[in-house]
Length: 201
Image 1 (cartoon, helix red, strand yellow):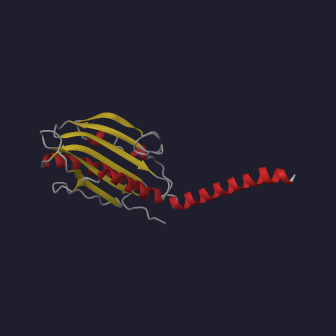
Image 2: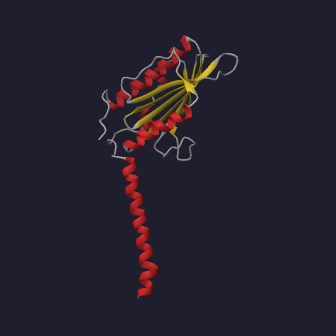
Image 3: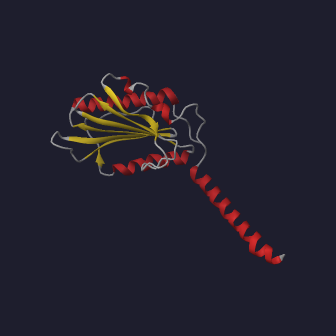
């Protein structure tokens, strides 16, 4: 009987103890749960491609999937649009959802790691009145002979992190069109989440 206890029961107890320790640590790291919502990341996309004539949906809104290089957990979504203006390239929109507050904060920071070589552009002045955190930057590299560059907007709206990316020319009409897209996404977030940010516990 003693041999059975030593070689079977004690290792099982040790494994269970390690698992509980890991679980408690993960819960503490993730922080408190975010509010229950009646919608998902999929609902953040405007129903008619930015409500704007001239936009074609290249990739309809879809779940990002757990195998994505963007470190999705299966609750995230994306869509791709093609503007009619030849001064604005393909527009990609990612929406990331987190069920815990600390994870949402980390998700925002994780998106910024793709933008280490980006910098502010004076022609881009958009500021969200709803997002708790936001970054709007462009690459310092130009694309091709038409002086195009990639610009990204990353913002955290409560537990949702949004990344809007497009390649645009360095002129006012092109920048204005990109800001129009950002205002549309921002308005969609307000429609879903309300005008006041959710307080963090």
